[in-house]
Every structure is written in C-alpha cells, then in structure tokens.
Length: 260
Ligand SMILES: [Mg+2]
Image 1 (cartoon, protein in one colour):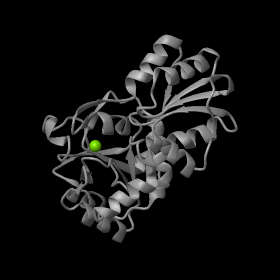
Image 2 (cartoon, helix red, strand yellow):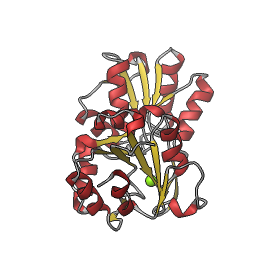
Image 3 (cartoon, protein in one colour):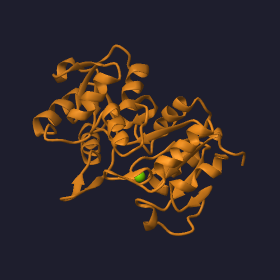
C-alpha cells in the first residue's frame, strides 16, 4: 500500500474524550500541518454546528478550522443542496442541527407536512414529539423523500445511555414503508464528503478511528487505509484487530505513518 497522503480523523475518542484533549493530539495535528499533510474531521455529531465544535477544540488547545470539519448535519445539508436543490424540507432535529443548517447556507425549511418535499431527521431532542413524528410520517405517506442525518442506536451520557435517532428512523421506515437515505457514518457519503475537504481520492487517504466497525469498516470498503487507535472505545476491541492497516496506541503514533 502506498503511504497515505491525507488523514480523516474521527473526533471523540481519537482527539479528545469529553472536554479533555487526549495526550499528544494537539502535537500530532501540529506535526501534520508542519509537514503539509491535509487532514479533516468526520463526526456523526448533530447537536452542535461546526463553528461550536471548532470553538470547543480550540478551548482544548486544538484550533481547527470549521470548514475542515464534516458532521452528519453538514454532510446532510450538502447532500440536500446537491440532490434536492430548491425543494422544501421538513426538518425534525435538535437546535444544533438547525444552527448547522443556517451556517451551511440554509435550506428552504417548512413546518407543515402538506408543504414538504423532503423529510429530514436529525438527532433526537425534546422536539421529537408524537405530533412532530406524525407530521413527518404524513409527509412520507404523501411521497416526500426521506433523509436521515444518522441512525445511531444510542450514545453514552453521564446520566446513562441516551436513546439516539435510529429508533425514530426505523420507526418511520416501518410505519411508512419507505427507506431513509442515511448520510452520517457508516454511510459512504460521509467519508466522501471528508475526502472532498482533503481533495484526495479514497485510495490516497487514511481514516483514523477508535471504533473499527463504526469508523473504519466503510473506509476500508471504499479503499481508504485504516488506523485503529486504542484510546476512547479502542481498548474494548480485540487486539490485534483483523483487517485494519495500522493498529496503534493513540493519535500521537499517527504522524509517522504518513511521514510527518
Ligand atoms: Mg470515536
């Protein structure tokens, strides 16, 4: 395999955990910049716009340009602008996803099922009520396109496991008989959005993640090199892990893999 010329990083568990930088992350990013190796972040986050993610990374000592961060929400907006240009979107999502839509250049948002050409589901929130789901369901029954930012099952919170968007995506699919186009990881489109930021083909770039299934399987399938880090969720997977290109202890070991 040729040495990768650019890197896509998963964020949580690779660069930081919660609000704490993982050891060596800032230095690794600085080394890549110094060597002129392009890199981008790919995260399924929908609860914050890219500008807020960039601010949070900067506060941890890792200033990162918002335009090099791809979230499930920003990739979805780009997808809708490309494939459903000019169509009216019923967006059922949390405030952060609405903020990302506004930052990413906006969509023609509507609130009534009768006005919707596309139903777009983001992350769950207090706004994911029966009435809101009913509105989305009726639009789907009338033939609106169905797009989901992600369909994660759950995520860890300090209070315990949090119910994620997957059950609402699957529930609306079940009742409407329609299939959602899912944009976030592990869908290939998310990786292609990050590769566009790098300006590289899949076989020229490497995906770095702490979850070999959620982060790396699709990357490998589309031809990217893969690097499993043993921080974040990393220690919970078998070692050595079959099929990954590189298996390293943490992000500090990544720059040498690309000659930085
Ligand atoms: Mg992760």
